[in-house]
Image (cartoon, rainbow, N blue to C red; front, side, top):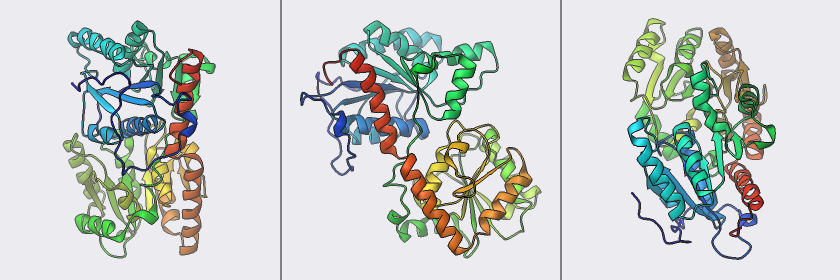
Length: 413
């Protein structure tokens, strides 16, 4: 476990990391601001983890303290680089034998580190967090990232902790509507804050040719063949099989498809998809390349980016990342995609689960001439910069924290 900081202390952020302007949130008394504790199962790789580190960065840049409790993971180093502090607890565990010790340790962390607000981003951590926050009489906030499906009463009860925060942040209007309808929560506690993209990282002008060449060589991309890219881990609801069906309806050799995303957790699923691609006649043109540490360069290689999810995406970070890189997006017409893709302007929304409709969307995107592609690219980049930046996401979340802490008379603001 990380050693506790002295009261009021904070880790020093890496001076090479760019600073966004959170001056409006700096403490008026000139001292250290409030301490915010975020809870999530692990700091692996994913949208929840990325949002946690992004918020830690903003908290530090506002002159506050950023703490994160999780079981650890590869993004701990990045958290520490931006000035946050990680404390390792088995807060992910669903084993009841661990719960009491984890709860007691979390209560101690909140007290010892003088935490002013607890922000939970996942269900098991939230069950610990809501009780530990109450024990220390500090406010409790949640962000509802996951799909809101609750087919049984037991599942609904398990999810319900995520709507019990003093404020509940929904990552899209789709999620907000589902929370109001399915859980009957009070609308006045609900705040919609879309996810944000790092506009410095996902900027086509900041990706040099050398980075693209590295991926071209690594993935052995053929010259002059349009690239269809589907980012996303291998899991059935993401729609990899649907995309293969759609590709089978296109002319052979008219595309090269890259399935980019973690495939190590489900090797059998990957092998079944590869076999299916060969059975449908497109195996030579579909390649599962695993995850990459350079998604901006990967997007820049793509002629069209696909989100083929069978179930609605709660938000869909792929959509805004692709558009921020000026790439056309073809996505299924439900969930968060309806809020991020401008139909016929930055991409196309197609009927969910319909391979023919997906194939038609791909044909449209791949048939764009140079001028049309340039217009779409400019529109997509402007759209993301105006509505889905990391800065906007973080500033809105800091506003939620400030709203709650001001009402509680927090002296550190």
